[in-house]
Amino acid sequence: MLRGMPLSLAEKRHLREDSRSPRGKPRTQQGGRGLLSCCGQLRDGCILALHNLGLALLSGLQALKPWHYALKRIGGQFGSSVLSYFLFLKTLLAFNTLLMLLLLAFIVGVQAAFPPTPLGSVPAFTGLELLTGGGRFTHTVMYYGYYSNATLNQPCVPTLDGSQCTPEAGSLPYNMPLAYLFTMGVAFFITCITLVYSMSRSFGESYRVGSTSGVHAITVFCSWDYKVTQKWASRLQHDNIRTQLKELLAEWQQRQGHRSMCVWLRQVAVLGLVWLLYLGTTLGCAVAVYTFSELVIERPVSAEREGALLALPVVVGLINLGAPYLYRCLAALERHDSPVLEVYVAICRLIAEKKLQRGKPEFDIAGNVLELIYGQTLTWLGVLFSPLLPAMQIIKLLLLFYVKKTSLMANCQAPRRPWKASHMSTVFISLLCFPSFLGAAIFLCYAVWQVKPSSICGPFRTLNTMYEAGKVWAGRLEQAGPGVSWLPWLHRSLVENTFPVYLVSALLLAVIYLNIQVVKGQRKVICLLKEQISNEGEDKIFLIDKIQCVYERKERSRIGRTEAAVRPPALLIDDADAC
Image 1 (cartoon, rainbow, N blue to C red):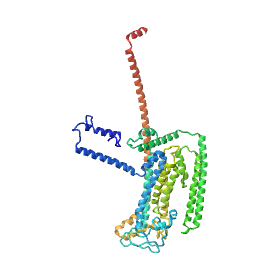
Image 2 (cartoon, rainbow, N blue to C red; image 1 turned 180 degrees about the vertical axis):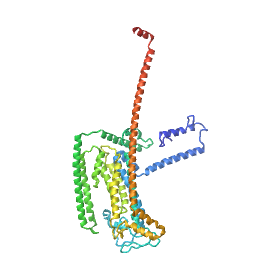
Image 3 (tube, rainbow, N blue to C red; image 1 turned 90 degrees about the vertical axis):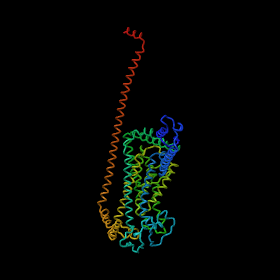
Image 4 (cartoon, helix red, strand yellow; image 1 turned 90 degrees about the horizontal axis):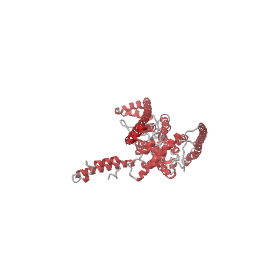
């Protein structure tokens, strides 16, 4: 029974020792006195059943993790470099799920429960909306224009001029404009905090240890999990350890190589030429897209010719399909020695380019990661005007995971040059935070504070800016009664006053700075401890050599005394006469 339990050898030995008597024999072999009573057997059976139930629950919790086995298989077969892409996709899925839950609870769900009265005719569904996103979808909760500027917990029919409903005295209705603005702000604030926390944790995990010395021995002797009992799991762990060893050896070989000055100068010249060609190509593509978009704007499209809106996406898609082949040729000229540097250069080149790849023998990490960052940036930019964009992004990420996984397993091969992606997740989170999220947040803040909303649709149709929704709400609260008079004061102190914003920003920057300093301190302490361990190892080697010398000296003296004691007395007399 112990042999079939998924326990370590030490735990099995401990259980075996507990089951034996003080004389060393099993308790079941000592006669009637050693047998357990019925209560004891029932107790042991219950304990064993609870233990097995706990193990089953633990394995079930591991199985409930999204794509647990798939990620293990990808990491074991293709290495940590390809696995970093799928882990990043999983992170984006968590961000969008959090954003979608907030918007569904306070905006989309409430508006769907109290649908507004349509002011005009609603177009029929034709199927073209799945490509253009317009038509029938513009009259649903998908878009900003569908949401009402009225209170949603009392019957109200909007007037023709679009003015808001007037609440009854003493009531505190659900204000959709305020809920829309406040939910968006809270969602972005929570996303910002989560991003900063994820980035700081990733920095701590990636850059805490300065070197990888000694990892080879640890991987060889300490990587195997002896609790693995199934054949497929042991095979998967075997592949994972083999891939880790390949990555570590490739990284060690790369550190051992040295380049001459001529090779370095030639590499710099080639890199400069390639970057000039890349910048010229990117500038030409940007000018072409801008010119074509201006032509499309000058010729407005009617509702009957809605398919003409697909012209600009088709042109951009063709550019995205053609540009990667040129970039691939340019990358072949560079011949980077480091695969990590090659991925970083590709990310820098693709930061302003939406890139699609097909039929590549190796998985393109840079292009696929930039696809994810590009899609997430569009989601954050458009969530203010389409609250259901996070739900669409979740569906896209789910489909993308299974499509990429199937394509990876069927069409791609492991990297020809294995490399360890120790810092890739940190780079991906940093790109997602600073260029992507920060840019989207700045754009949305400008739209909320400065841009005049539409005067014919949307929850802010009668306001000069979206920011005025808070002022209107504070004015209504002052008329609602003395019980909520503290809320207008809270709004003036926290929202209209800019000092709390600066204070929160300063605290956030201080936390980031302190976290960076803590990580630096930990790295320094680890380096000092490594140096101390190295010195102690040298001391032990010195002491072992001294002990070995003393032992050899004693051994020689002992052998000499033994030979002198064993030699016959006649030989000793002859030796004395000879002297």
